[in-house]
Amino acid sequence: MSSISRRDLLVGAVAGSTLALAGTVGWRTLRQPRARVTTLSVPSYDIDLVDVLLRGVADYPDTVARAKGARVVLKPNLVEWDPTRPINTDPRFIVSVAEVFRTLGAKEVVIAEGPGHRRDTELLLEQTGLKGYLRDLKLPFVDLNVDLTRRVDLPSNYTGFGHLELAGTASGADLLVSLPKLKTHHFGGVTLSMKNLFGVVPGGVYGWPKNPLHYAGIDQSILDLWVALRPAFAIVDGVIGMEGDGPLRGTAVPMGVVVMGDQLPAVDATCARLMGLDPRKVVHIVRAADHGGTVSSSRVHMVGDPITPRPFAVVPHFEHLRVLGG
Image (tube, rainbow, N blue to C red):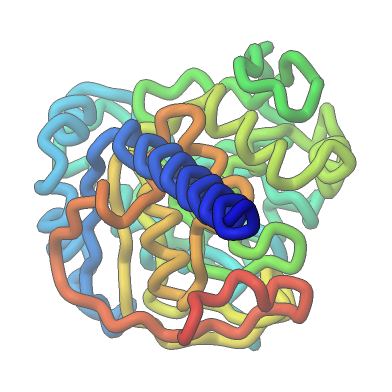
């Protein structure tokens, strides 16, 4: 009799703990604000990208309103040059986004980046072909590595820095837009719109490749930058992505997608799912939920074109990111 009672008690305790955990997880999900993310089918950079992107941005009337009369700063991902690998945000993609915001009535559109590997940003612009596009369209470019800086407090302070000196052009923008490439990453699992904020940290202050951020932790630094800057929008270049040993030595993936939204964690969580990865296992994405970010798919309203996920290869120590069964 007493043995049965102890067993019943144990079963009841386990059931109670499970219900409590489920309740905690449920509350963590429900407290995430509802977010909208748009996916667009874009099979090639040679189509009318401006028209497609305008269709997508129209889903975000607040962003459209904010762009009018604003100084819009576009932050692409420019890292290194290798003609055989899709390392950087494609220049045709970058200038098409610039044309979108000009069409929306921006007072000024600036392209700005602080490459983490190359000190010679001018050479990188030449090699990627972006310099010619900027010249033809009379688009200004700011090298954030040598930009005037602003002291920005870090409310989350996962790095323990308390504050950072960040490039003033980006941190002082009326509308800061992250334009990353869809890639895996050998240190962070993925490198998307939140990780792209590393380029706002000036190499002229913190060196190359922004080593203090790496020492403090990739995920911790990503979170601190996102919480402090809160970029207004993200548009991810996934027309051709990269899998495997990204962000530099991976393999091209013709994914044919553009992902956009006004909440960066929701955009990055969606991108992870499209890559066959579980965003709940990517530290900087899931921890963003503690700071008003949206990660759960049940809180994301998907609009645009349906896109079939494709499992991306990852380096061995990130195999645990794979979605079960995918």
